[in-house]
Length: 405
Image 1 (cartoon, one colour):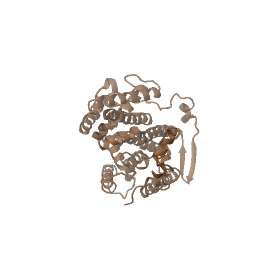
Image 2 (image 1 turned 90 degrees about the vertical axis):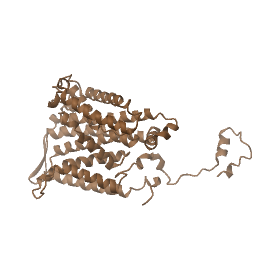
Image 3 (image 1 turned 180 degrees about the horizontal axis):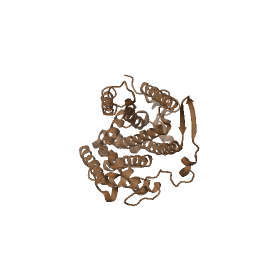
Image 4 (image 1 turned 120 degrees about the vertical axis):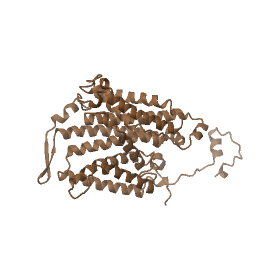
């Protein structure tokens, strides 16, 4: 096995990255051919892309907790639900609490509530072993799901919340963009026209919002990962006692990582509410947490690129299995196969690629560290000579600076 060399990061891709790029290229080509042939509607394709991006956001949030700090959070679905219900209750027409507010207000309220809940669950658990955090978050997920399902006067119960506006409703230009854009019909394959109507333009706005959320979350996490804050978190994950011995307040660092990841998960919930325009307690199913954990393990713990890849792969398996029913020659119902395929994927990854498909080595190094020459520059003078020069020439004549090299 070849040894990882940071000096090659700027010049070449690893074999795994090349392979992943090739596979993604084939998938993109297959999707384009399906669109051209009319087998896949453009609006539905953008909806699936938004769903995959939502899982990628959830994976980024879990990666900030587990990948950076080793925090075991089994309440991904809970914080996702907090974001979705926070946005829905503030903006929906049939909201039993408020409703009618701007989606921006719903976004702020949802993220604030998620941060408050994260602090409330973190204060009594983050000072203890990781086992207690896992148990507490597992209980939190079920408590929030049952609360949303049974408290009709606050959450509409199992009926859910309808009438959620799109995120850009009421905005200048963007609010009326889907209705003002003309309906276009593109014919690539004769007999299979591609229609770009109001629904397509609406989903295009949703994808733009998703890319803004993803780009912002990825940028923040990448900068945090390469910062001293990120290095302390990786030390805590590897050996918390060592971090304490170095004088670091490990509780504060873990709390910051837990709140940051929870807010990103709530951000995914806000996007889902305005994408689906309907939320109900079924969206907080524990299987959502399972899918997100699979995505992080698949991509590589601690890798932001891996979290993005894992989120898209999980949705590809989850939604792609639905199309197996379209093939008459396939003897098995495709929907139940998704858990089998995801389970098989976990086994293969843990057996042949336990570090994940895209481990985080590249992400831990600043780009400036690999720019220019491929080998470190040797100093032209010794340490004592430089020290003497910086002190205004106050060194001894026999410093021997030239001999220090």
